[in-house]
Length: 227
Image 1: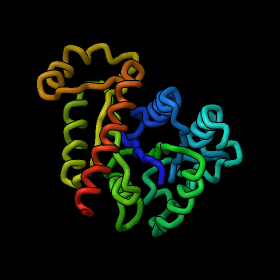
Image 2: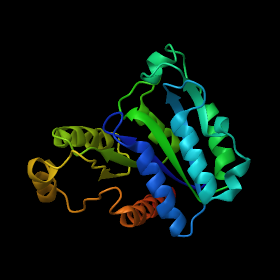
Image 3: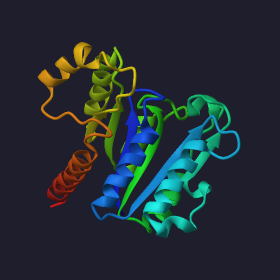
């Protein structure tokens, strides 16, 4: 199994796809063969837009992925731009579908970035939430958060959910134009309460290294538990 990173966010339209592409490039520069997977994409009319963009970038960075098609990268697509539970009309999702797709991708890469849909508590079906996929994939989670007013609340709620589920994680900001007030309204809190802060676009290499270190740490802990 390759190294797995599950990319989620505090909400929809926060920048998961942009972040995934940035990290694909960072890991490639570190000498790793990258792979990408988006289990579910909603709001699809024709080809999945996010999945197609991810596949295009990943194939440039890792030519071994050129044999893959969009259906290999996006396992479940729905036309309605809504939570998978709603878009898929409440149908039960068979996680074996995702496992088989990941197995094919992982045969071609050293590290695979798995992009979720929406935030952690987005419902998939009657039983599963998006956060359950991080568990199922046994992946280290990267939480992407925004820089608008309210990011403190949104970030802390998502971090709390990850802690309650005992999931290994890191988190990073994706600041955009128009977020100029961030340095005055929110950043002072984060600087006071967190030792490490990562900004997508500025700290890509440092974040990629930290994610690999987190994965190694988790692997060591699992080995100790097995022994």
